Length: 110
Image 1: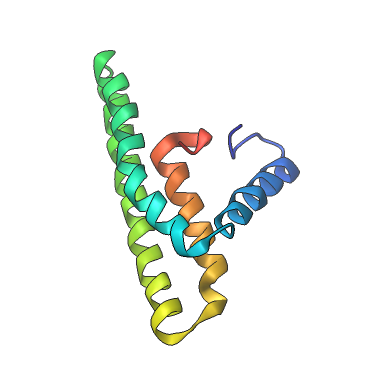
Image 2: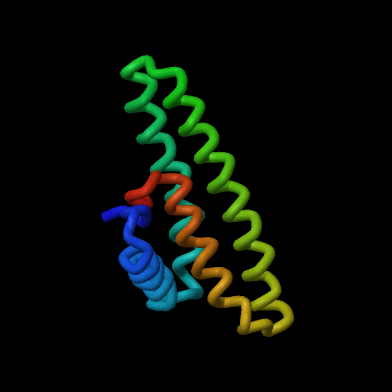
C-alpha cells in the first residue's frame, strides 16, 4: 500500500503507521534504513534498465539522490538526539526515515 492514494485521510494515516513503526526500536531503525535503501534503489534500477527505459533510469537515480539527502538529514538530526539529548527531534527522525523509504522504493516505500 503506497503513501500517495489521493485520499488525504488515508495518506495521513498511512504516514502515521510508518512513522510509528520507527519507534519500535528507534535506536536500530535508522541503521536498518541506511543499510537497505541502496539495495531497494538498485533493484528498481536494474528492472528499469532491463526494460531499456532511460527516463525510468533517471527517475531511479533521482530517487537515490533524494533518499541520500534524507539519510544525510536523518544522520544530522540523530546526532543531535544522541550528543545533545534533543529528544524532541525523534519525530523528525521518524519522518526522515519514512521519507527515505519513499524516495528509494517509490510510493510502496520499498
